[in-house]
Amino acid sequence: MNDDSSSRIAATLRDWIADAPPGARLPSTRTLVARHQASPVTVQRALRELTAQGLVESRPGVGTFVRAVRTARPSDYGWQTAALRAPQSRTPAVSTAMRSAPNDIIALHSGYPERELLPERLVRSALTRAVRGDTTLSRPPVAGLPELQSWFAHELGAASPVGVTPPSPSDVIVLPGSQSGLSSLFRALVAVGQPVLMESPTYWGAITAAAQAGVRVVPVPSGPDGPDPDELARAFEESGARLFYGQPNYANPTGAQWSVERAEQVLEVVRDHGAFLVEDDWAHDFGITSTPRPVAAQDDSGHVIYLRSLTKSVSPALRIAAVIARGPARERILVDRGADSMYVSGLLQAAALDVVTQPAWQTHLRSVREQLRARRDLLLDSLHTHAPQAHVEQVPTGGLNLWVRLPDGTDLTDLVTRCERGGLLIAPGTEWFPAEPAGPFLRLNYSGPNPSAFPDAARILGEALELPGSR
Image (cartoon, rainbow, N blue to C red; front, side):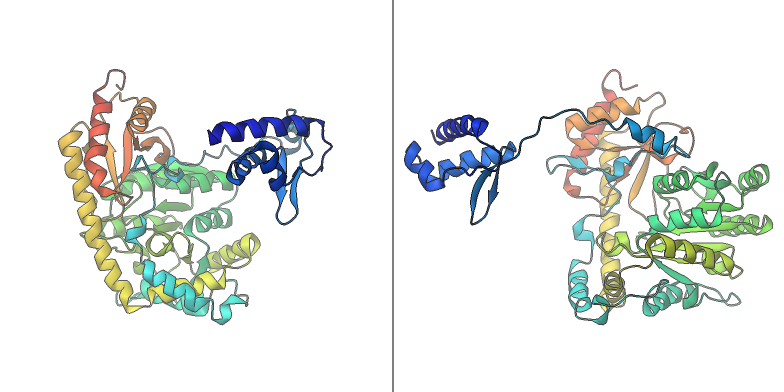
């Protein structure tokens, strides 16, 4: 009855508003209660309905007024077509991995770990301390807080063998996330229209950053142990490229880790061609049954440009990463960063440094390792039981994802749609290939919310694969 009364009051007020001038004040709530013999709650419900429809606006402490209603007409942005011209390159759409998922759907598509895998207590305490410090009101150096530069340099230097000069803090440039770093690297080190070599499959964000920078991506096939050195050498020779982007540890999406021998071979090829290796160590903190082995720790001649992120392991709200580069390349990257963002928030830098220098940080990482192992194995077992058609060629020793091969002829677009209708959100593997996909793949993230739903997720996927038309 209250809903009927509020609808009746709203209808009456709409008639009144139609004849009232813009800015006219509506009768007070008390007047409307008396006039319509309704409760204040019912009157407020009617006013909220009119506000939602854009007919009135409320001014707290003053009253409710008729809004200036303009005649709706299609907007004409045709002039922008001539002003913008054609883009330099076709930038891929935002990845499925960045979609937000409703609470009632099983989400295996995201690229971020869920909240329970983050050091929440450490982050909250660090932010509390950071806001009391000088970084709250001061501008940090363009290259980053010296203390944070030292931490990044020391961490990589600790992995450097005897005979290799470790990086110095001055080699470090702090970034507002590794995605921003990739954009700077491609802009600073590769001329527009020039080639960049990339593992295939590879991180979709690197493909996007390259497209936005206007550079040409040349795919290099990569397997469980990394890219084939002979194929890499041939790609360098045929393309004339001077930069190779790779993920030696727990690659996104495959989870592959380069063997020690393969890393040495790749580094030798890069050196022979007078080129750079951009090493994206995004999953450094997510080892499960192995430890990360940075290739940059083996190089002190400036061939390896090392990208290290804390965003996924500390908190997505603290977008902090760093690039470690030596020689003129470092100066070019720093110039690009200064032009792009001037500097990274000192407050966020201080909070991130606080987190990773706490004794509890290493304890947290050990806990995450065990949790990721349990989640990975649960998803693997669930797929084996409920979706045997989905084949995992390599069990990752770290990272956040399973790379799943589907039967030949699988219609990925149809499969993704079927799964979403069934309550499962998945990411098609096509987004991780710089060129044509090598087959039908899915990337399934086992670090997302509600791992207890993994068996249900596998069941939905298995049923969708069995339905006619999915292949």
